[in-house]
Amino acid sequence: MRPPTRSPDARFGLYSRYAALVGEQEGALAAGDLDRFGSLSDERERLQLEVDALPEAAGPPPHEAREALALLRTALEHDRRIAKRLGGLRDEARTAVRSVERRGEQARRYLERGGPLGAAHDLDVRL
Image (cartoon, rainbow, N blue to C red; front, top):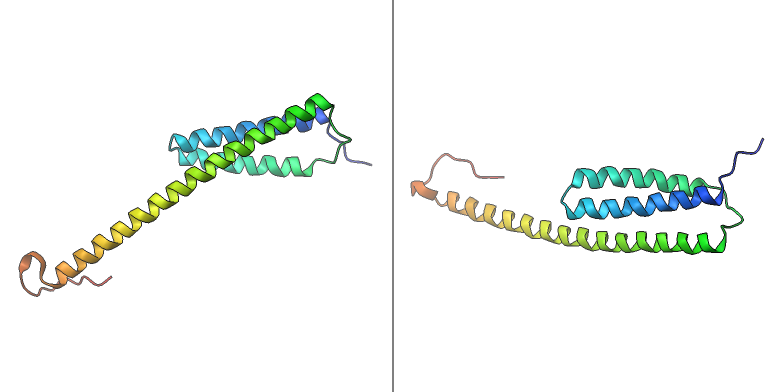
């Protein structure tokens, strides 16, 4: 028995949902809602697997094919902005980590010199 095939309409519906999910992800990232961003990423991955599992169809009607391409282009544009924003966040986090490390090193040296006590003390400042 052959597995049931999905119609081109079903494929178009999945593309529509996929594009919407990517847009929601961009919105969640812009709002700083990383929990929502992550859950949408999981949902997007599941949907991608569903799309990939679809049998190859003969092809949708030309107007639907154009609409499907437009949806996928929209999703790619959202993805491009997401990647740019995540890259910026990565750079900000790297700068913040370096700043914390530098301040920590400065504090460690200060305490090794005696800090506010002005002389050696029994505080272990080794990390």
